[in-house]
Amino acid sequence: MTRFILVRHGQTEWNRVKRFRGRADISLDETGKRQAEAAGIRLKNENATAIYCSPLRRTLQTAEIIGKKLNLPAQMLDGLIDMDVGSWQGLTPEEAAQRDGELYKKWLEQPQEAHFPGGESLDVVRQRAVSGVEDVASKHKDQTVILVSHEAVCQVLVCAMLGLDNSHFWQVRQDVNAINIFELRDSSPLVTLVNDTCHLKNLGTG
Image (cartoon, rainbow, N blue to C red; front, side):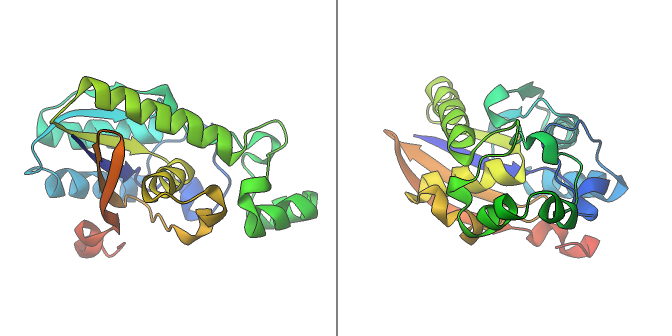
């Protein structure tokens, strides 16, 4: 059995104004850094033995802040990188809807059918994320591992662990710096926590 603690990264300016982030290498803002600190304190007694993160700066910073509290180095895992949103990167939802109304409508109503122009679909994200998790599980049997990733990746991973297809994408909420916990037992998942932000309450952001 491998126990996973899946964490969405802390706040960035693009999160705050709700721009499509994708592969843009954005840093945490000051609120995001405080959120990561709070997550590190929250996870201090979870006996984690490793922490993996997406190679993008916002996740690496979150993982490094958490890892400092736990005395664990952040290790990058390509499978956790954010969804490639192609030419939508940097757009607000309003700008995306104005540029490509049909695709934006599909993204909201049938996300499993949407493919970002010059980017990825949820199926591609899910395949690489699940593959990455399975690879980590094979290296950390009977251990607890922290994963730090992005909103879309966290959503598809939670769907996968719950046995839901990607049509349920919008039914899985992932707030900034949310914590999720699941276990893999012989590849059979057990989800024990989803979208926990209790550690942020004293910051006024959870």
